[in-house]
Image (tube, rainbow, N blue to C red; front, side, top):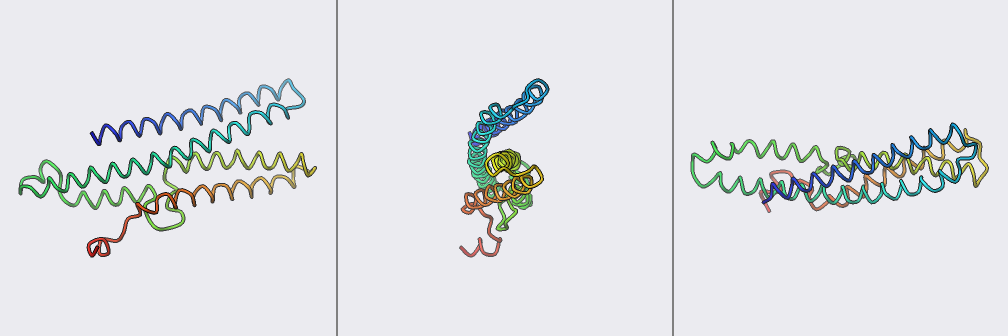
Length: 192
């Protein structure tokens, strides 16, 4: 049952990520085709860029939720394996040696469950966050160029700064959501 739930979870994450990436690439292709025949792209960009950004934010939030749910399911599966491993001396041949728990802890660390600022860099949600931060940065740069009448050279640093800040906020959000799942050192966990 847990494995089926994990499979459904991973399928949902893959589907959501694919839809978002398809929307981004379709928008860029449409923009490229329109740029060849239209002199003013403002209406197209004003309609498409916010829609892609909002879709990216929803996708990001769903991927963070699914990633954390996936880790909870994986932890439950490991606890069940650990219990069955203690039932008989021969159980290691069916459920693997206890050393696999260490590999599990190392694997969970790669998806951000360590108490450090960049811990969430290795999730699917962070990839969506990076791309969506770039989309947001482009939107801010275009808006700054249009509203403040900035030249391209002046609007570019504004957009880059906005993208970096957005990405940092995404990472902070992921870190805060994962705080309850952060792995504690073995000594501390054993004393609790």
